[in-house]
Amino acid sequence: MRIFISTGEVSGDLQGALLISALQRQAEKLGQELEIVALGGSRMAQAGAKLLGDTTKIGSVGILESLPYIVPTLRIQNRAKQYLRQNPPDLVILIDYMGPNLAIGNFIRSHLTNIPIVYYIAPQVWVWSLSDRNTQQIIKNSDLILAIFPEETRFFAEKGAKVTFVGHPLLDKMISAPNRFAARASLGIAPEETVITLIPASRKQELEYVLPVMLAAAQILQSKISQAKFLIPLSLEAFRQPIEQAIRDYNLNITLVADKNIEAIAAADLAITKSGTVNLEIALLEVPQVVIYRVNPITAWIAKKLLKFSIPFMSPPNLVLRKAIVPELLQEQATPENIVKEALNLLNPAKKSQVLADYQQMRQILGEEGKVCEKAAQEIFTLLPL
Image (cartoon, rainbow, N blue to C red):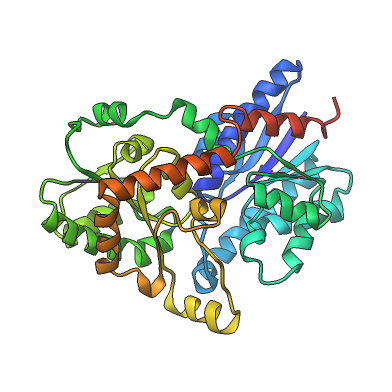
């Protein structure tokens, strides 16, 4: 049997890889041959998928920011559609990646009407949708939605979708994650050192809008905590040169870590990070964090003034508990001075204890560790012709 998976960006590649491994285990249990063809990235390829296109380098957030990626996205989409016409799969799985995946879903519904579609990790319209249109499109294009947040499950159920809560897949990843001691040993860092990990970018636009303010904050922190060790885990190899150049420009002593990203987070006393799925990973590794969200100022103005865009929280940990368990600095609030203020506060033992207690509460809501992807795979196989 053949499954087609479509996702984008670094986080989608990670979630896709975890799911592929679970699907293969489920197929083996059932004695089924399984072929997986995908739009994704290197992690999915390593997990066993045949890639039709690499979508990890063409992700963006924002109106202006997405313009350079329209043509590359359309090219990959056309390639995928041609493949699907010639090699119809038994099932399609969509992972996040709203615009492109809604287009793929529409294509399947129009031209390959008998193929079931599962939306796994649906776009977070339950948080930020500007209208009901995208929500209804997701429901129309999905025979089953596999939800990763409890609030997401309630939202889609109330809208009439067939939805099942499976939990968040990062819980499965945590089983093999190193603790603080093991991570530091792996990186050659002494237990008593103060470690601050910076996570500036998984999208190219974040190198422009997030990295500079983060490094400016690191300059101040390096002067205040002279013994602190700074790390940056490398999300994409293509980002190495611009990040190394920026580190030199800011005259900072920062170690760039490749292929040990989770160790670089687990070893930290504090993370200063972009907004995204990585915030949840940091929380599950029990590291206090300051979250930064910055886009092109014109995009921010359009979203706020014209589209009246407003959400209660930006980072997943805060969204899960619906309260501010980690500080968020959005757009003009994300100044070096504000970042430093929040960072120093989180290095306070009393504040850290409160954050860790909130993290534990969040973790209990997210599902059962080690069972999330297996449950998702089992649900998917109920729609396959066995």
